[in-house]
View: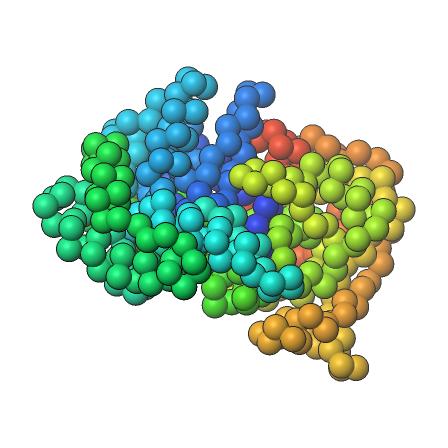
Length: 430
């Protein structure tokens, strides 16, 4: 059986929620392998919208859903998300949700530090963090001072771990002119949430290995986008984890040989939230048109997204870095009605044509897009479920995108509704 990794091929917000929901119906297990509650997926099922941030999308359909060791978990955010789903009639229990015992916890001091540093940053140096404590939690993980889910099972061992954690954090807080955090406050915080998390805890790598050996279909659900990857993204305007497909193995404990198919979710234009370079950004009527038609506001933050033309250079780069086998092209219908549509096919950097985004922050800020212009279409593509339903120019646009990025379209999405999808290749049946 094929196991599928879903990743965003741009800066996130590509429409992963719908595609993951479509795939999760075929999957036996759905796994989150990186990030935290700083990224959101919106699922629309029978007209009802479900907004998820931390939980894998499979929980809505009652599939076994796994939060892997590569995720950082805010216990309070998790409990609140489970409660919101309960209000919508979705029950999340230890039978449907499993959490890796070696996953790192986000604490209140992480959220506070995140906000303090972002607010203190000078203009032009802000990262655009969601201030949810994701980055500081990952820092503690790498610094080997994090509190993990499994630590809640033996509260007697916590004081020493908390002391090590606070040696670092209280030094930072003193430097920022903030009061220190007491060990008792952190202990109480952890003691309070232990009962909420421990019923879900398991040895995830072992569980997934067993499912793989049984021939179960496993879907790995990425959050955010490849261009926000800590190594391969537009550094430093990135997230604090690896968002590329290779992290599916490291962030779940299942070896890379188990990853059969990588599906890159790709929006038919480009958007970005927060700070950082954006070569094809359209801060004009075109950008306003795309943002309005595409309802471009963040699921988690509500922040307005920056909008621009499709950047084939970036997506081609993402296809290489992720080993993408096929893409799911989303929001094609947002382009309906435009007289002409531009695609970035290369960059100009200091008078030279280049075919990739350079790693240097300064160079990224200087690149200028080189466009090809295609005729638009006036007919509607919304709700199309076959190629025959699409205008000829829309088909040409899709085919040209395939050619430019070097990857085929496996699925084409024409509205938020899950059935409004043209299936070319089922990733689970490659």
